[in-house]
Length: 224
Ligand code: SF4
Ligand code: SF4
Image (tube, rainbow, N blue to C red; front, side, top):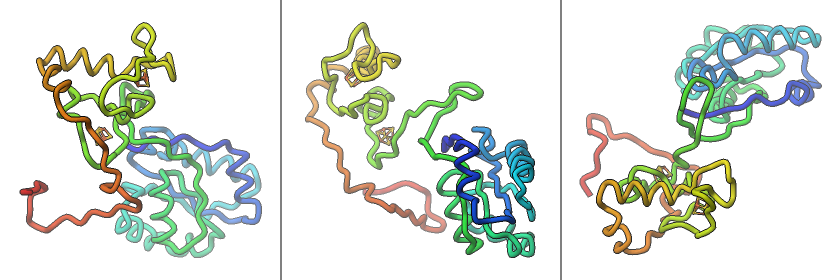
């Protein structure tokens, strides 16, 4: 899921300096789990903006915020409220905020900073395990991602700076490569890994902006 963190309220308010009437947009999925754009947060934002003298023309929670067709469908139901608004305040990830802009044609203001693709360790505790590099090497590295979990993104082994199993860049974190080595030893593929050619990451596979078109009726599996 996409992890978001709410911007400080004064920053949001400042972005709305020139606007009076606001339409609020939340997201039922990632932003709800991150508590940055679900029902509760949208209601709290509504109350807070009203206390600051803003007029809320309406609100909607998109399911999810990052789906253009869903946004267009829901915005049609709220056409008048959106037309009367000076802008939309969007409580989702950066993708959802841009979808809201595209679907409405209105000025949009994000309330969140979008941080990373996260795993949920437990309620309210998120961790980055994957940087979406476009060329997954987890098969070689014992199911742990060196691109993401090693602070230097090293693909072929440790930097040598670890101390007591902790990363030299951030001692709060375990050294990813020590964990990977231990895991490879455990599953019996360490020798194979050490003997394998140096891994180079092909950055051309995820140049931005990336798009993907699924072929209809075809399973998501490549033959070549
Ligand atoms: S190698 Fe790491 S960053 Fe790349 S796709 Fe796999 S888990 Fe994600
Ligand atoms: S100490 Fe380990 S995790 Fe930290 S940068 Fe070096 S190899 Fe990567």
